[in-house]
Image (tube, rainbow, N blue to C red; front, side):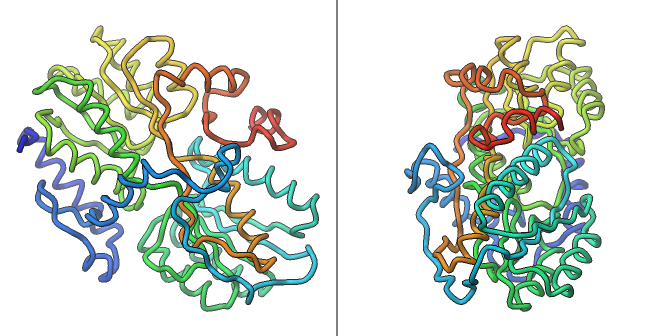
Length: 400
């Protein structure tokens, strides 16, 4: 078996970072029982069965119309929602949002609002209420409790800030009897009527890591840039990458948390370049990807083999430079699905217990097609947002 060589100093830094992640947002005991040790010494966010399932799901054809991927589902197990059926279309749908603190979430939030307007015009829902926790766990717990205490919500959508900390609040919402819909980030409970998400973090991280392994040479050096600890989809991305890198001959220089801040990303990459070569960049999200590329330009270094995301700023820079790159995708069109699911549940229609949406990276072969379709969109827009058929297109996303 080929093994990844990790510099001693980077390994020490990694240990500190992982310790911080553990103390900040530790999973529940149930989650601990389910985890499996990895070759790299153990990762509490790695579950072998989930990893295997997500990597396999990449090759499974979703059910449903490919023209509406936000309604497709991979191997759905349907749930009877007749108990939640209501007469009329005046239901109040409430949404507790973790935040709109990054471009991906801003893009999705605009898409969700546009979908809500369509459903209201069709008479499928009445009032739509939302709260924004600003990435504050305590605030989101309070927001969810306020929705529950109001007694006004006929359905409650939750996009959790972090995984373990928000679990009790989601369970409290479920106990209220209101149908709960969780999407994007998960929690350590399956009490929600449906959990909506693309294939997942393992698939994203694996797509990116496999691309680097396939396009770099043995002994090449890779720097991993991560946003923040304690969020399942992000932790899973890195867990998958470490599994794949461990079976390669790439040298992982280190993994650094950036907060998605462009200045911090540029500073980190610059420091690594001052120490020596960096041949590849692995990212767990696309925020600030252009800043990483600019660090190579400023240092007069060759462009790295790189993975970012389907944010247009990265894709345009990729096209401009001709660098070897991939845009892994955490399908932004998923922001349409929860409000549609709410109308289905309130109509007593079946929904998948776990609604797994398709998630396919953008390659060089289809990059220009997505850039052409989104030519008039701002740089912080996401190519696979899936809102082209909504009445507010394109103005709503241009005027963010």
